[in-house]
Image (cartoon, rainbow, N blue to C red; front, side, top):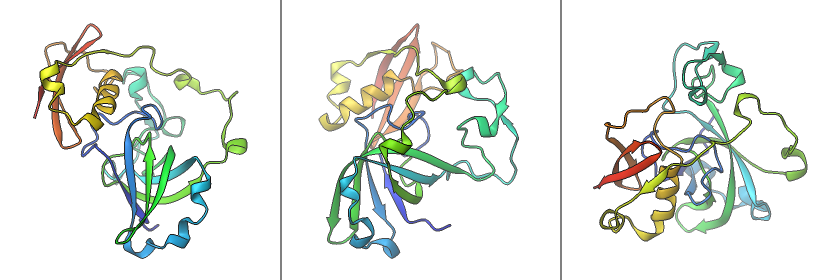
Length: 221
């Protein structure tokens, strides 16, 4: 398996990354091919598709051993499920699968083909193994049953973002950052109202706390 490309996003660490692709549509990313694959012919016709599949590596979750069961955060971290019945990053082969919207295909004079995507749930620099077009009539299953993950998060956090702090965020990143905070970037089993969390996003350190459904931003640096 060869790394064919890497994606560049606003998430330099795992903390805060959306739990599934497409949840936050405003999040932007750029897929830049490795030098060996910077050939415009390789993406000929891709612009005809609105969405693509990305096969990638959980590069921060590589382990020598594996466990047949994991504790999904969705279930509070207290219930074990089979690893193949979850999307846990801790797998025998650390391979991820994401469906993202293809915004445009750019041919850069130095980097070759660059894919601009939205809705990605990947960390900056994540290695990509393959890219395939999303085909609606085969890939979409509206009547599918999704087990314990059949419903999205039941609520969004209210975000209190003081104007003086919001002004420190580039205008082009504000919508995405607020959406990330609304979806609660904390581990799902965390509930400490006194704890101040720090999240790296787009070159900033965002500090916040959460109490009774209200997330308050307390610092931007």
